[in-house]
Structures are given as C-alpha cells and as structure tokens.
Image 1 (cartoon, rainbow over the protein chains, first blue to last red):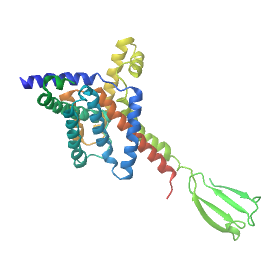
Image 2 (spheres, one colour):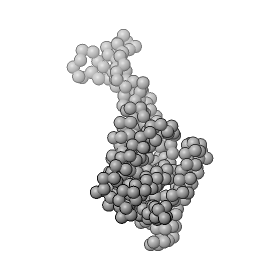
Image 3 (cartoon, chains in turn yellow, green):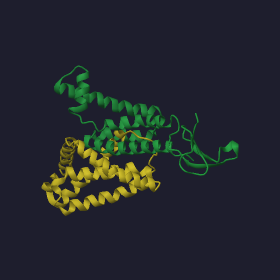
Image 4 (cartoon, rainbow over the protein chains, first blue to last red):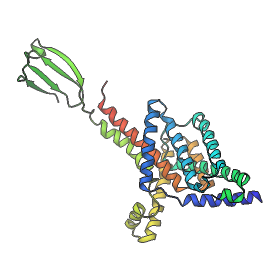
Length: 136
Length: 168
C-alpha cells in the first residue's frame, strides 16, 4: 500500500518535472553562475570536477523548484542538505573522466540522480508529514 | 615575412630599428645603426600576434562539442524546433513535433558518433543509457546539463585561443 502510494507520488512528481522548462534568461543566469565556479576550479587545477559539481548543484536547485510547495517544512530542507552532503563524496571520490562527454548523456545521469532524490523526499515526506506533505 | 622599419625622429641619440614578425615571434629592437653594423640588439616582449592557424584550429576543435552541447538548450516547442520542422515542410504544432524529433535524433546520433570515435569511455555512455531507459529524459535536467557543459566548452575554447597568443 505504502509502496503503491510512493510509486504514484513519484510518477506524478516526475511528470511535473518533465513539464518544467528554463526560460532563455534562466539558462543565461545559470551559465553566468557556472562561469566563476569553472574559473575557480581551473585555477585550483581541478577542472575535471566542474561538471559533476555544477550538475549536482543544478539538480538540487531544480529539485527545490519542483518541490517549492514544501519550502515551509523543515524536514524538506534537512533532507535536501543530507542529499547535498551525500553528493560530496560522489563528486570527490568517483574518478570522473577528463574527456568530453555530450551534455545529453550527462543529462540522463542527472535525470537518474533527480529521481533518486525525489524518491528519498517522497519517503521522508510520508514519514514526516503524512500524504499531504509529500505531494509538494 | 619580416618587416623592418626605421625610426629616427623621436629624439634618441641612436636610431632604432623595429623588426616586426607577423607570425608572433619575439620582436628584435636594434639600436645604433643595426646589428650588422655594430649596433646592439635586444629582445623585447613578445608580440601579441597569434601563431598562424592556431586560432582557427582551436575554434574548430571546440566547435563540435559546443554545437552538440548546445542542442540540449533548445526548447522542445517553438523556436528552433519550429524552424527545423518548417524547413522539413511541416506547419504549426506538427512542425514543432517533427523539429523536436529531428533535434532528438541529432542528440542521439551525436552520442553514438561520440562513442564510435572513442572520445569518451563506454561505461559513462552505458550508465547514461541505463538511466534514460529507467527514468526517461527530463528536459529541465537537459537544459541544466547543457548550460553547464556549454559554459565549460566556451571556457576551454577561450583558453585554447588565449594559448595561441602566448609565446614561451
């Protein structure tokens, strides 16, 4: 019963996420945010971490946009912080390739990452605030 | 081609001959009537000219990655998709749908070409393929990934072009 409900919530949230598009100024703003991060990492000699780091930040930000209705719940922000903390070892310890990978391939990995965070949020939401809390 | 020109009207005791090298090599400044006539030659700071063919080579090598990464930025409805659909002979919503399919096919073929060219490791593509199969493609994630990749591509292009202007 709980699994069925979680599955339905997840499907609904993924559907909602698929309808979201960034406007041209949203993309431009995102690229402006990316630039100093890339420059800093290059100066530190860790340019290979740029895409994993930026995509993780991007996905967490995208999650906040999708689940914006949950912004008043403390458990939502705590869960997001835990998700962000879990991304740190993922970024640092996975040997990311220095070769070029097309953005569409990275987007597929991002989509999977997004769905995992979404599932975690749904589970936490069920336990913390009942069915209405996880609907976001 | 080396161009030398004579400067004698700037009030110095000794005339100066500047040698300009368009290929971007160091500039020699000769004073006192020229090196062959007992003048002193010293190397000045390198010129600002790029090495021949370096800039175009740097731009071309990064153009493919910039182009492919930019595909993810294209919104599915309207805009470029509509234009591409129109070019294929369709109108309105049908043009959007056809254009989107063409863009999607281009993205997929780009990944295939990339894999065939052994540019990236197969494990990354395999993981991406598995992820796509499981969850499907989220356009917002595509735009975010494309924005980040495109910024990195442009930065790398800038660095490659800048390297053409620096001489050891």
